[in-house]
Image (cartoon, rainbow, N blue to C red; front, top):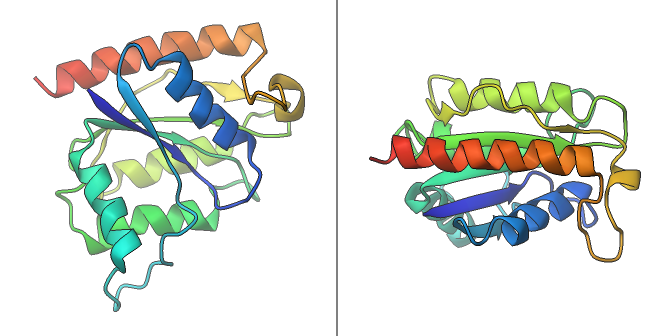
Length: 182
């Protein structure tokens, strides 16, 4: 099973990058999980063709068995770079890239709500008519206080409560992907 853990920001430093890498490391024995960056993807424009980096992004998502979005929350929503990257999958590439593709959404933020609004925003985008992804229901993992929940040297999630929530979500997601791809 091939999964992409997508870093949902183009920021040079991100706790969501830590989260994506932690997911790939911790659950690498259950699936082949590649951390995928969006920082070099061309900004979306409906009237322009994708460049080579963007074409690779579209193809990598297309061939993956499932995707895990890790998103921060910027002004109560997902970052513009993530919205743009997702638009290449729906508005440009057509519904076949994400159609019924298993997807999960997690996130961390500095605040107390753990990127809850951004995660809801991401789910709505993934469920939109241009995307029609197969989004794992429930299983919210809202990692608050990012600066105190990760080891800044190793990037590992250190909060045991959040680790247990993430363990349960990933077990459910791997089963979800297996069922969806039968």
